[in-house]
Length: 69
Image (cartoon, rainbow, N blue to C red; front, side, top):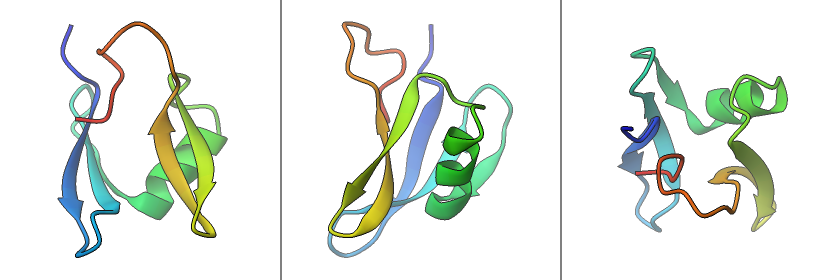
């Protein structure tokens, strides 16, 4: 199974800032992806506070299919 979410852009410090949903074709900013995760659309992902900023991350499990690529 292909990876669902792909990181398409990082900032200079390496923070993921743009994402692409390979299943729906949707492009999202970090804030849009965070909102979708909080609304329950992406059940295999969660939001962590990193350096004071809500950050999307894959939920820890044994599969690589839901890792941010």
